Image (cartoon, rainbow, N blue to C red; front, side):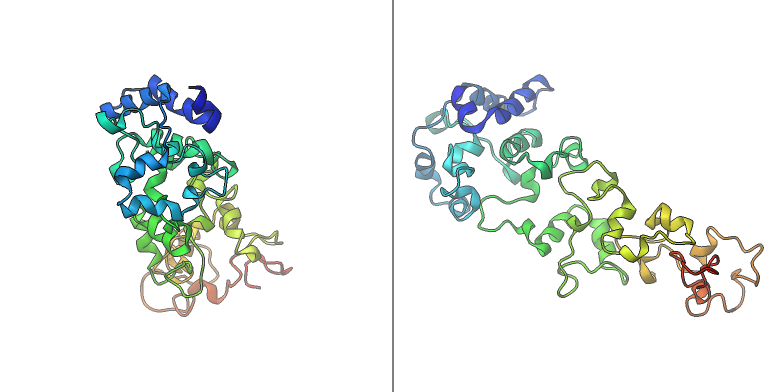
Length: 312
């Protein structure tokens, strides 16, 4: 017990012990692993003992090319309890074949226990909102997105990040490939825009895990010219960008949720307009070119003294 707290800090042990107070995990392996953590029976040989059996596995030895396998940093698992830093105390793994913690596709414990191991080192400012986040509730494990036994974690590259996110978020992947969409990395040459340009994968206190305090503030990070303030404000603009735009992609120009004039007329009824608006019958100036935008070109707001109708 003392060895765990000294080498890893109390956070990992606390996270593991917390699981004993909750519902029992269906697999007996988790109960055995929690018991092993409590006993703290670490091997004196470290990685040397592990490599006697696992040294021929390329996926295992790839760890030594990664930051987690480095001996140059005191924060590295390999500089602490080596393999057992993440996979737990060896105990009677050799001989009695006691289980060790497995991650990823071969996981033998809950996502919560897996993540408690990772968070014992990585619980910093960028992850303090993980608890209670959408991914946490969905029981997503860190290893579902990240690869540890590799020189370069694919999710850390722009293209790899998008591929990882869209492997689950298939609806957004379809939207990204529509005719009007953000220039995402891998889909548009030279772009490094990724999902985390707008979202925090590790959680945030805002809707949809946005990086900024609101949706509009997130959009303004790139579209600052739409921020204002302006003399004449268009209410939907200040309220919510998604009132008019589909942020992940659209079949309409400018990522609009609907084409004009139908989009405009979803708020602005035809009654009272100075001229006849589009009513679905015949052709008119209200469906030519940019439709309503032929006249009302400053729909995001106007600073012109006579811009109340967003024409100037």
